[in-house]
Image 1: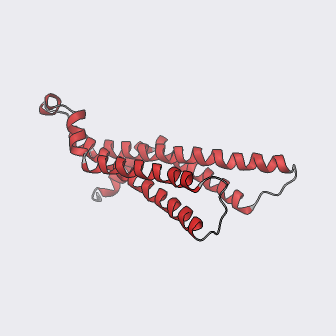
Image 2: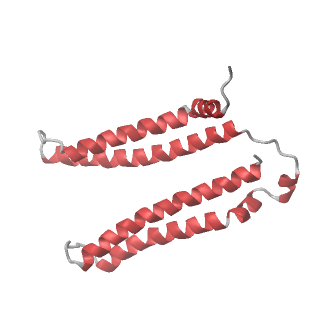
Image 3: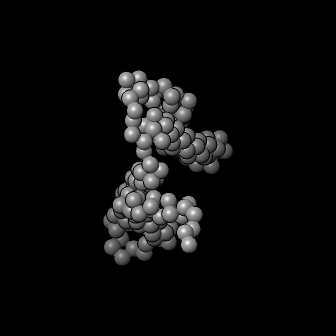
Length: 177
């Protein structure tokens, strides 16, 4: 694979990530809209402000996903000018690409895990302030275990990416006897 192909695939993957984030935001927006329409929840803030706060991330994620997905060729041409593309560039091996992909996914999982860790720690802190001997709810315990697993997976992907890519490369090779 050449640099241009790797950059093209990278743009598309980041676009796919933002498309997934847009789908998550759609779910949040629909839940808020249904709660407002059925009057099943009382909102302390104005409804227009809530819709604005729900629609802004949705439009940002959707526009970014479309730009990265459909404009990846243009972005690659901008990032790698013609003078750099025409030179004979050293080819990148599949194992190197897998290693970078595992590291990127690991960093993504780590950032999500750190954000969730902050949420769980905040909830524990709030629970501790209300009562020193409060029982930790089962949902918070499950969230803590999920965060720990996510952080562990992220660390394994980031720091074990070479080993994983080597393992998968050996799996694809025919068996030697």
